[in-house]
Image (cartoon, rainbow, N blue to C red; front, top):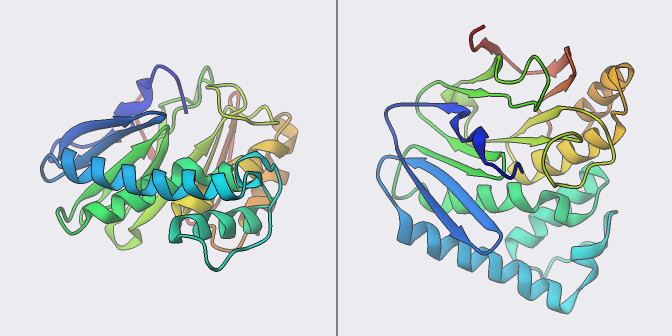
Length: 242
């Protein structure tokens, strides 16, 4: 999500092995029990191929900014993106980063019981230990000052973010950070975009929280605009320092 990728210190851990896999636009940063570059590369290529081939036959999957008709014959990752799009009322590609993180992360779970897969600021996490994920919010004074405490019983989990002030991802709003938690990282990604589109200023935080928490499958929502922050749902905050 953010060009410099400086947010890759957001997950605080010293017990896992970090590695990176990049294939075209997909740039994954992964933490696992051991390096799994070949397994990750194979998974990325496979899931990208499913999406790219589907776009060849149905171009509106890539271009539409609103949900499109479901397709029960589509590959699983595509069906998940179509479902997330419908629930969050955005185009299917609004969920692509979360979907790749989730599907690649799940493919790695047979090789490692601890998997954290980050894709452009969108995270899939499966962990047997409590983890803290920091919130990067650009120039907001709250950026990297607060984090989310993730309990092992809540994983696998998607933790996805959208911003109208940071990075190149499309957002129609002005939030410094919208963070969504869901068992589906595809849905968390789509919902973060949908909520972010509503936030034009601090006065819209409550509206964004209400809207996001009503999306079926969303467990929690956090919105930061400047020095203001609002949370809703099953979120436990952690202080990251002064």
